[in-house]
Image (tube, rainbow, N blue to C red; front, side, top):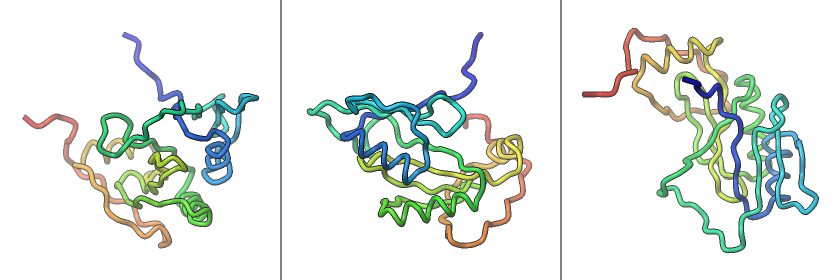
Length: 170
């Protein structure tokens, strides 16, 4: 059976493509891959893939989502280090971006914020040196989101417990 290798890209309907491109490029840090000449769509990249994010102009009769609706809750992009997460947070604040919350999930440290259309987004840095350690931590803990001071020095990574949370409760 073929299986997906990774999430390829995310597509968002936005009220103003130009405004959203400026936000995702200038505030979040994406690079532009392509902008349609009529500004009805744009494609942005994190610098490796041809595009990680696509933005399309919503129809004039669009209905904004609310947090209680079924569908996308948020999406997340990894930054290289905790220092870069702190820098990204500073840039968000300098651009008057609404910060929703900042937490330590154990395997990641995360800043959640809203884009110009109120779409929730997350920037995170990994806590562990390898993806294998992060997965081991996630497999061995019930999950959590401890509030965190993003301006404080990087916390020490938690120990990976000997437990198994990979099975659904009976």
